[in-house]
Length: 583
Image (cartoon, rainbow, N blue to C red; front, side, top):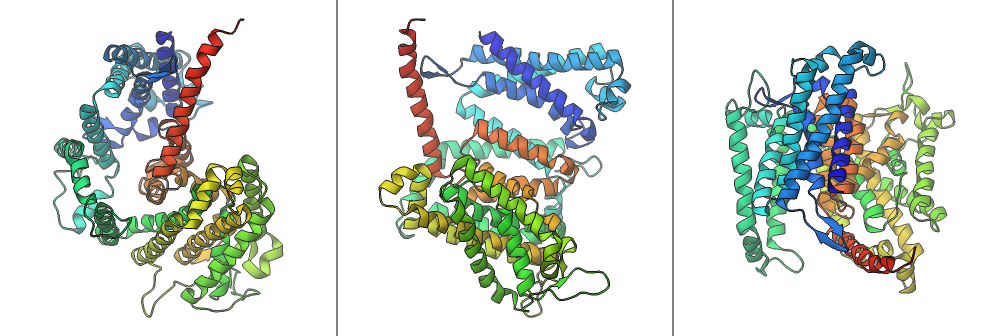
């Protein structure tokens, strides 16, 4: 039975590798070097699926209602078999393509080029290349299995060293700029001619990452305990939290000066989506209301600030005034924009008060699609310009300082994000936040305990909409013009994805999710066409491997683990009863 499970997991990994080759993630990135000339992104893709298969087959399993971890021998055998199965499936794909000819396959799958075949066969004959793939996949699966069952004192430093080194390799267009800005030598770390890390730099980064992980494992809890025991920070705030928060804030303030204008442009987009994520986190993470039409508040904030600050319609030749144009200062208009979004949130939430779960998601998805249709329709041309949109939106300047440039806009967006995070954090710790938590966990019980469900649902929609409108307002300031193409339903999916990826109910998780789903694709422009594929893969991986998110909320994480323990106990209680039931 175990061998069959190992082979199934490995075969699935082989299918995934074939898929990566067919969509171009292997053939199109053979020149993207991460470490030296040997470790490239394409070669990493060849062994990633067998490695993950080895990790999966060596994971703990439920047997007889109890959780049993795999032994070292089981991990070695299972990982090697799963990796070999993955390699065998991919090797069969190579042999089949060589047999019928890659030009025939390319009629259907355009990425199957002669260059791809040369790469996956290591410039050898098809049979020799298939054998090499089989051996490499078996070794990768074995490594994954051993790494899964290794003691934490070994697994954590090794994982940290590999992860951080690869991250530095991917950020080869970011970190060298920071080194140049502060006047540090970078040739020892990154190769100027080949790109990617040098082997000396990779070894230094790996050693430093492993050392930090070891120190944290041995002394981290002791140091955190010492800091947490100091009573000089007021109720509910730990010194470690203050120190870490101050360090992160200082790094964020210095980021534009260290990274330059190009990366500041990407970070500005991250801040806009972080604002949207903070607002949606109130609705989904705190109150448990699944909203797929959040683009409504994004569009509302953008068009409202354009109308209130005196933008013009985007017409050819002339720039006519819209039907409503007040010419207010940006900072005077922002409270009115938030108030309008809060009222709109109440109006959106009122018809769906009786809906929950999938039904609520479908209704809000329809509302979000309606916004895209309305702002692009001929009906609203006198107000918002219809398909042509609007232009001439204010740059939110203060005196002679404008915020249209990437570095200046970053600071404006950062100030709004910090303000929104503070308000959201205070809401979560208040009576309102506890009422939202009770609604999310069990709405009927919360109603029976005297919580006004209608009131707090409407309040969640209003607060989430008000914060989300800030993201739309800053987007309008950043771009300077608006068109309906910027407000597709995909924006709602993207914001929901970053909230789930980071951890629902977690404010740091929202920032991490925005950095991963918005920042990394912006920095790695080579992967722009694979953005949606990366979104899907990241969300699936998080849901399977870490359902609480990358930076989970403590209470939410406890809920998920308690539910898992209850399910395990139920399985353990049901299995003896099932054995005693006659066929």
